[in-house]
Amino acid sequence: MSVAACLLLYSFGVAVLVPRPLARLTRKGVAPRLGVAAWLAAIGSVLASWTVAAAVLADDLVRNWNQPGHIASACFAALRQVASGGAGLFLQAALLAVTAVAAGAVITLAWRLVGSLLRARAHTHRHAQQARVVGRHVDGVDAVVLDAPERVAYCVAGRPNTIVVTSATLDALDDRHLGAVLAHERAHLAGRHHQILAFTRGLAAILPRIELFRTASREMARLLEMCADDAAARRYGSPTLLGALLALSGRMPAPRGALGSTGVDVLARAERLALPTTRGDRWRTQLLLSAATLLVVGGPMLTGVLAATGLALCGPLMS
Amino acid sequence: MRGFGDLEAVIVDRLWNREGKTTVRELVDELRREREIAYTTVMSTMDNLHTKGWLAREREGKAYTYWPTLTREQYSARLMHEALDAGRNSSLVLTHLLEQMTEEESANLRKALARLAKKAR
Image 1: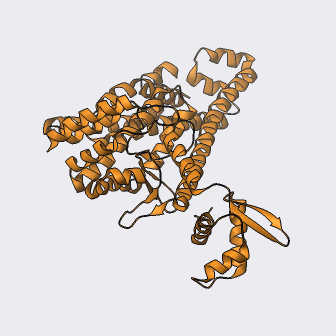
Image 2 (image 1 turned 90 degrees about the vertical axis):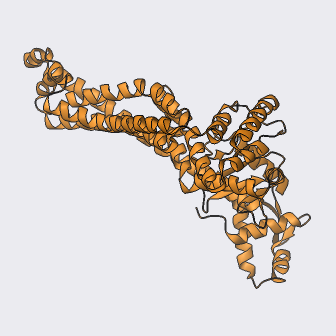
Image 3 (image 1 turned 30 degrees about the vertical axis):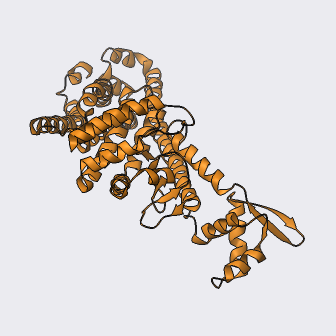
């Protein structure tokens, strides 16, 4: 019981305390890949904590089915007297309810997450397929070309994965610019960025009140763009990629639908392409991000072990 | 669900290039000018395309006549709309090189980018 309580406490600590400092650390995109790893580790440790906590509760309940007072004592010492005083049945029912709620919550979350991933996959594959039917092939362009006035380039996962550029994009770019843009998109596909995005976005949509998931989903989108930028810049050079961004950010026809972004993200991306960070800055960020990752991965394990051996602070408090 | 078969893409493409309604027989004749293909293959493929919503059809005598439900341009526009709207209300997952912006945002961004591009050189 105390293991479960400690893990829950830990997970809410991470969910509340981690987003802000981690976002500050990854904002400039100094080490985008490490940033992605750190965010994924934070999310993973929270989800793992919940799952293990629910499993421990269920396990406790099953093993101590005949001595409800025993489990309770591990949690609320005061209740022991009540239990021995004949309130066993009530206690048993209460514990059963708590465990059922915890297990139900975890199962519901998993169920909805899987559903959201499957929906995203189906929708994305359908879009890719339609784009391949509707689009043209242009010699020398390793992408599907859609005739449209918007300057747009994007990639969608599918069978096969598909990169889409519009005719307006082709008109705006010269060969090297186009090469850089396509390298950027190929990096997304090769790095399976869609799967990461679908996961973080799904989680943020299911539990929008948890700041960790909300922030992670937003920051992840930025960081993945920066990862792809780096891949394109390695091959074509930062100035070429900047030039491509510049050419594509030209006057676009009035966009349809709602407006979301303010272009701040693109500016941040452009800044890091134009003004590389100093070596010291890079080292510092890499060190801090690695430490953060180790901390959130090791946290639940440490919490679990300490609680199990009764060494943790919450151990003596609750047992 | 398998990817869009090659033949399906070819058939939709042919129908977009033709005027009005087309029977299976007419399309088979057209395709046979370039390659050997069985009538039943084309027929079942067009039936599939109807099921998937790409083609509409009506019975004329013994056979069906088919036509695309949307023009190529309409499909392009629809895909573009879906792509630009991705992530807001839909389950479509894609990564945009650039987000859509208003004229003013775009102009500001362009100025900043031009400054940076000069610095990077």
